[in-house]
Image 1 (cartoon, rainbow, N blue to C red):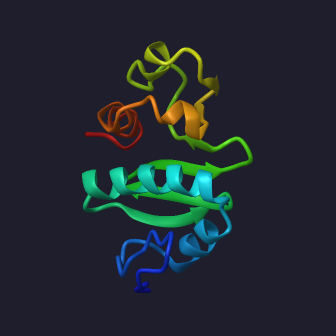
Image 2 (image 1 turned 90 degrees about the vertical axis):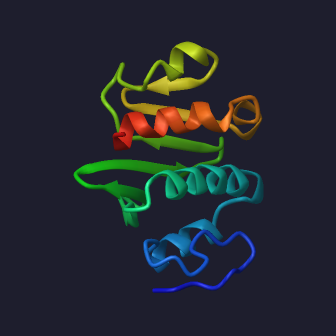
Length: 129
């Protein structure tokens, strides 16, 4: 399952990342791939036990019984994985983001103004402390 350090690689030899996830990432447009990579690195660094597989045709981060789905689309990246209102105040701090039930859409320009600590708080709301 190991991957080598291809440009835009998310696996980088990490056994936690299923090869199908790298194939998914290879298909992401470069501006959105950078944002996806940022979120991916934050998750892997914060959750040493996490595994990454494809579920619902998108990368899914599994920490115990909790899941966070991260999909790349034309607009940027969408995050799915928590009940409405349980996103740790993230949508209150960033009211300009497009959201719907359990989903937050991040465009690269919007994400540039969001700190890693703030993204990590959102990630922890989905995957637990």
